[in-house]
Image 1 (spheres, protein in one colour):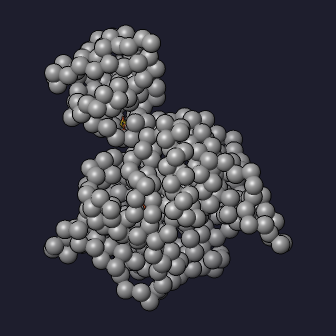
Image 2: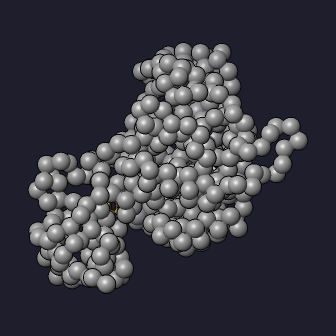
Image 3: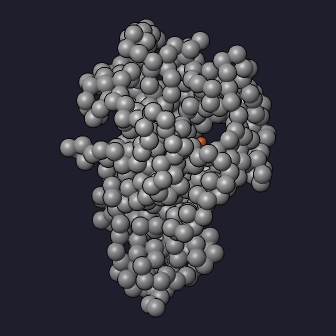
Length: 307
Length: 93
Ligand code: FES
Ligand SMILES: [Fe+2]
């Protein structure tokens, strides 16, 4: 049952060098740099996003993900979710409004897979970048790079997938849209939706907690994914795999790495999900096709290279 | 252009790096498989090596995979090491 969580709000990614990272996220992926704060973090967003920011970059000695946050419909829903999290036994920390510039109060808790998750209800709305909301044009003309439109989801690796299913479906009100099961019925991957998207967050089983696989950005169509591939070559950016299609969610995609080794994805298309839809299941025996629908072969690097 | 010869002592492999190219970049450009290729950004740790000899410059690498002590002992991520001379290294995995 949905509980008022609407969408991914923001993700904070650790990078080894902030200016190099900006060449990747701003100049190559085409996100808009919107602000910086006095601890040196840089705030960005995709041009279609109405809220002020969705990506925060922080310089650190170890790349990876600090936290990912989901936006909740209003403060009443946030209060209810906070109470539900406490009842479920989560250790909840309050992060005061303004700790991220323009973002309201956040509540932070740990997923059973070790990741820091957050919920918040309020963020400054600066509108779609370069457009007004009165008689808007189709798109702004001065975009750069891949012209990514929004932060769409992230994929995280960790150990306790069953624990995450309980947290996301029973406490946070996401649906289990897709899953990968081994022959004994154990979960190898879980994809959750809180919207009509095929996934708003996904987890793959892995012995180590709190690992980051990729942050993903939406493009409008396959031609844009091919254009992104051209830009990856033109800039000598390390390619992971693609352009290709996934079996899971059926998105059309390409993966590449930022200058600190964090993986990025840009993708388009794929399935949609409504709350009454049954969970789609892939078997581990078909994992090659589930992950890379065309080659139908598992690529070792895609499964094991993480930050 | 200057090329440096890199010897991997425990793999019986020799490859070369152009000036400005990382050790891992050299391995990949010569289609060798002597070192595992991951993120190529100093983040994932799969390309870890030990440096035996040679001059080089390095870029920042994840402290999770190479601690300050390890760095001082010559351990490194080969995607973040840029040779300035011929080098001898050991692959780790
Ligand atoms: S390839 Fe990932 S650290 Fe070198
Ligand atoms: Fe993805």
